[in-house]
Length: 119
Image (cartoon, rainbow, N blue to C red; front, top):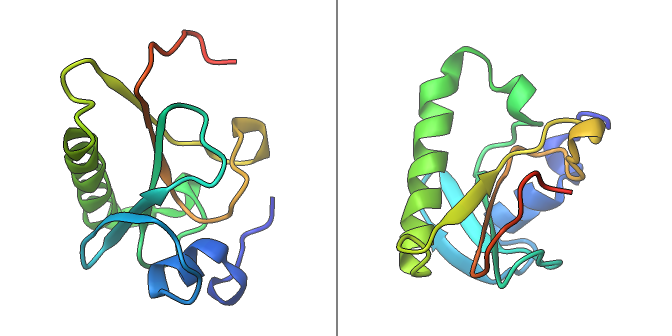
């Protein structure tokens, strides 16, 4: 996987509104939207609004990236009423980790019993 630049990043274009998406929630620093290829009844992606290629590229500014990202993810899970029965937060890094878009993102998966270990 290459380190996508902000100019050709589909998630940056979604965050800026250039590409439409089914937005669930938005803050100044993060956006949550429905995945186009859902892997569970509820599958939402949460991304930072600024371009970061993946978890390995977060660097020393970790708190101003992770806190808003995880806060919005748990808020959206609650909004989707997944908090009582449970949900999974997934973050993939690199091609062997399953990352298909070079922009940091957290998957929220829920709405059914999820197996472990994941396939």
